Image (cartoon, rainbow, N blue to C red):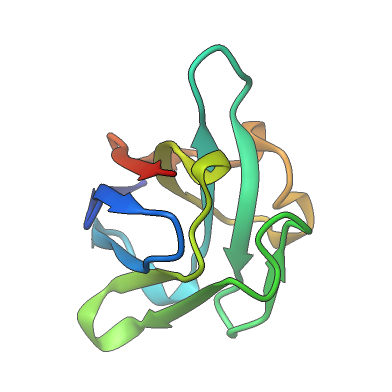
Length: 123
């Protein structure tokens, strides 16, 4: 497994931007696919976006056009640039790693998880 640590969360106003980072250590990070999930209070954890080891990306409709995922394998880090934030984006954001990109929408496919970082968007 890889070990993952998220950072970059915080309190912002609607319309602002934030960049989350997911730093990895452990096994060969460049061969892993990474996803971001989020969980708001009282709601199930939901898929936000994923990036494959080769750079393919896939976004949830709710964030398409506002969020951008990228990875820098030399730094063993995946970034989530979030723009035009809305109050409904408020959640704890988790990054996770999976060897199986085909199952990217399912949190059960991910075998390594970070501890999460809180993002709060005020209106």
